[in-house]
Structures are given as C-alpha cells and as structure tokens.
Length: 450
Image 1: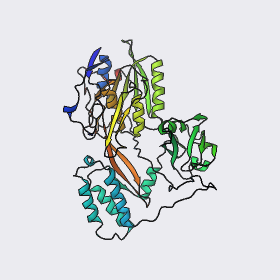
Image 2: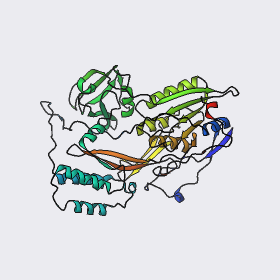
Image 3: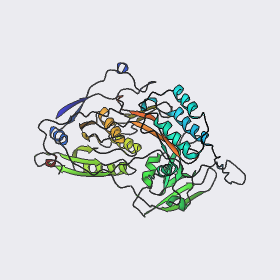
Image 4: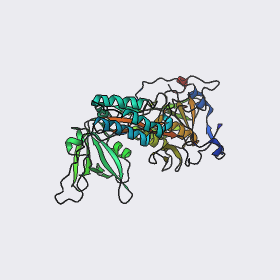
C-alpha cells in the first residue's frame, strides 16, 4: 500500500468569498491508502466514451403565477394578471436583476454599482420604440459584463428552459418553508398538456405523497427521482390544490424517463485477490444518484475492494445530483462545497448529512472536459481525503447561474455566485489539478478494465 498525503478541509469562509491563504489554519496531514497496481492502471486509462451532456438551469413557472385564495368565503382563486410593461420598464427590469445579484468577478470587465447605474442612465436617455429593440438593448447590456454565462433568453428559449423536466411527468417542484420551519414541496411549473397537467395538477399545488409514501421532509431532488420511472408506466400522487383546496389522489402516466448515466463493471485480476469496481458517470441527471447507489451495492456484494469513478468528459448536468452523489462517499458533517455570492441566499455551506455508503479507497479519473457538477464531486472527495484524482486538470466551470423571467415572457440568465472547494479553492477558471497525471511504469487500461 502506498500512502497519499492530503489536507483535510478547512473551516468555512467567514465574511470573505475567498479567504487569503494567510488566514487559513495550518492543515493537518491525512493518509489515504491505495493499491499501487490500481492507481498505476487508472493513471494510464484512455477509454473513450460517447458524450451525453446535460445542462440544467434554474426552473421558472411555465404558467403565469396567480394569487390564490387566502380564507375567502367562496374559496375561488383570484387571479392577478401581469400588467403590460413598456419597453423602457422591461430594460430596467433586466438591469435591476443584474444590479441586485450579479457576481462582480464573474465578468472580464470591471463592474460596480456606480458603473452599472451610469450604464442604465445612458441606455434610458431616449425612448425605446419597439420590443425587439428592447431585447437588443438587454442583450448588449448583458454582453457588456464580459461574462459568457450571463445572457438574454427569447420567450421561446425561456419556455424551453423552464420546461426542463426532472420528474418524467412534466412538473417542477420547489421547496417552500412553512410556518413551522419544515419544507413543503409546491409545484413551481408545469408543462402545459403534459401528463401531470392533463391529470389535473396545477401550479401552486402542494405534493403530499408519491405511490403512498409521505414525502414530508424529503428534498425536491429526492422526490423528483421518486417520480421517475420507465416510460408509459404509472405513478400515483396525492396533491393539495392551492392553499385552501381539496386533497386529490391521481394516477399519472410517465411520458419520459431520464436515461441512466451510470455504466459499471467488476474487474478481477488473475494475479491478485482484490477486485476493482469501475463506474463511469456520463452526466448528472435525476436518476444518477439512485442508479449509482444500485451499482455500488452490486459491486460491493460481488467483491469489489476498490472503486474507480470515471468522470472524464462529464460536463455536469444537475448540480444537486452531483452534490447528492458526493455525499455518498463522505462522513457526516464533511463539507461538500461552499457557495458564495453577493446575495445572502447564495452564500451557503453544503455538508454531508449522513455517513458514507462506501468506505473503501476510491480513485477519480478526470480530464479537461470534467466540468461543473463533476468538479464538485471530484473536489469534495479529494479535499476530504476520500479519493485520489488521476488524469488532467479539469475544465474550471465553478459559477452559479439563476434564471429570471421578465414580464414579457422572455428571460435572462445571470451569474450570481460561485463554488469554492472544501479547501477553499476557487474552481472557476483554474479547474482542479489531479494528484497524478501519469505514473511511471503505467500499464495499458485493457489489462485491468477490458
């Protein structure tokens, strides 16, 4: 066994998004034992897989929101239609979103509230004659930030993004805190004429159970995974209509299912007693965690002593799926990732809330197309001394975007924060450097994995 020295995660950042190294406590070394043959073989791995990339965005409602009853006598909904906005008001609305939440160091050009205020004054000096002209102005205004991820969405593009479906039945869920401090799962958006909508689910409904299982206390991500299943099969859900409506149980036919991104196999070597569980994750989608748990259990039951987690060419997908997968390997209380930004709602420390499913040594394969959620997983396992990284420096996509709907149905995507690893490394731009790029005496991967 060869030791690998690494530093455990540092305490969470205080008021600064990027604490200076001089303010960090001295790290204590830890040792991760890993078999030399496995590390050597994985370092030379050159397996090529087809790429299935998924880019999920924050989801907004498809239907126009409306105020629902609050103890009215007749129990009817009172709809509040959005008032028409002028072209100038639309531009100012987009300007305000950036003003309130944009991460200044996300762009390649200087940004400050004063400079941004001056830009609004310059733009709104004259009248804006048409809606298409207003959209052009918003597009150029956002481009001036120098951030390729902050951009304008036409109404058709926004509609496509808002209909991103994690559930397979055409709805999106949002966690809403109630008066007791617990969370309710409320329908944030619906695909019009989709399975859930056709069955009678409406925006604002509260989801109570899935196939008879009470979902109180579960996250939106976990419940979305529960709703997933083979195409054309049925799932039974119970919803409470609005805040003061009846409770209804309904059977909904799934119309789409996320394909499994997990591919795995057990590799045994004739000249060694140990076996290797090889797992390739192509992307992070709604079924990634569930299918990975199944793969890990099957490989462990088949005698896997060590695991190789292949994240090469994985461009990300659902960030929450990556976070949940990282937790499978961490101890309770270990930091998964820090999120920082101007808005306090963006500032967060995400930690593992239970013990690890896997305690055996793990090797993570990365390359220059390992990005976003994949980098969160790789850094979480590495910084918590749960894995060694082998391959190439990762892509370096560590920014957080939020999607905002404007009053005319168009939208804007704005970078509002960034991810910082447990050891306080800024992922964005630099990526993550592996522990080993290629080891001396490496053997061909087909001798181990094929």
